Amino acid sequence: MKVSQSTAKPAVITTPNDTEIRIVRTFEAPRDLVFRAYTDAKLLSQWMGPRKYKMTIEQMDVRPGGRWHFTHIDTDGTKYGFHGEFREIVRPERIVQTWNFEGMPGESLQTALFQEHNGRTTVTSIVKFERKEHRDGMLASGMESGMNEGYDRLDELLRTMH
Amino acid sequence: MNNDNLSTTFQAVADPTRRIILARLAQGEATVQELARPLPMSQPAVSKHLKVLERAGLIERRREAQRIWCRLQARPLRDVAVWATEFQQYWNESFERLDALLEKEKARSGDDKRH
Image (cartoon, rainbow over all chains, first blue to last red):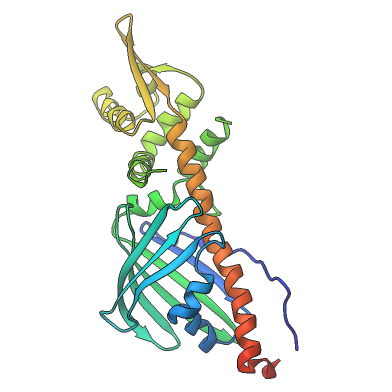
């Protein structure tokens, strides 16, 4: 039995075009199980978000047209709500859902693709925003590793302000 | 941090011209004329961008000796930086937790046989 202690490899985050963010991460587990961790509320609430947040899942109706809604509660009581609708569910290959971060502008459409190779599963999440500025807002200062020129400027700017 | 303020800041910095203006102001106060000079647009167009930045609380404008001076207000940008760092950490920490959960679930379901 080979069990990796802590793979702790960061997700690869890129912007393939003007309105999308792509997040790729590989897990040491078969696809069925990873897919279940994304779609079973009992499992999802055990991993989604930072440890310090308490997570409540208000709604999780995993079928096309079904709604989902969850809330993270910070240690100081601040709540961060997320909600949307499932558009496509193809077990164990593909989940398409809309995604709203309550209080932030712009709904995004998120497609998660699950691919298995030799017992490991790569999850590719493509987050598509309606408008470039909404995506750029999300990326505004550091989410993307290989930043474009404009964001390099913002980076420089932030460095000058310490 | 208030999310409405954050989205205002995000929208303000989403435009490359406004980031150039902010980068210039990070080096010190400047007049509207100085800010407009390197930019390929009219001064009224620059003024529109300055208005957006002012509404977002990112700059302060004051009039002195017939000129309008602009100064950077860094606080909202710091808030964005804090938030964005948290956002990046959000996924990495989630995925690390998922790693641990998957190990646990694999052991439970006996899927480890395949290794």
